[in-house]
Image 1 (tube, helix red, strand yellow):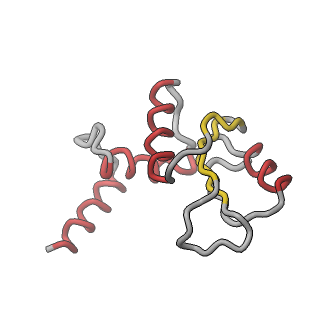
Image 2 (cartoon, helix red, strand yellow):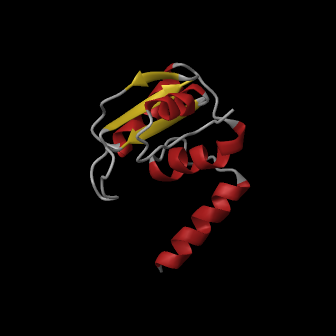
Length: 117
C-alpha cells in the first residue's frame, strides 16, 4: 500500500484511480497527455485513505498546505515511511512546532543553513 503519491502525465484513468485507491495520505497532480513539464497540472488534489477529499486545487503548494491542515483537523498521524519528510515540511518550511526537531531533521537543518553562509 502506498503512503504518499504524486502522479504526473498519466492518460489512463484506471491507473490514476488505482494509485489513489492505494494512497493512505498524499497529494496528486495530473497533466493532460502531451503536456510539458513546466505546464500547470490539469488537476491537483488531496487524498486521505484512498478517497479524494479535495480536487481542482490551484497548485501543488496549496495542496501540501491543505494536506497539513487536514492532518491536524482530523488528528491523523504521518505515515511512518514518510515521517521525516512530513517533519521537514512541517517544522522547517511551515515553521510549526519548529523548536522540537528530531536528530535527523536537526542535522539536515544545520547542513542547509551552513551551506547558506
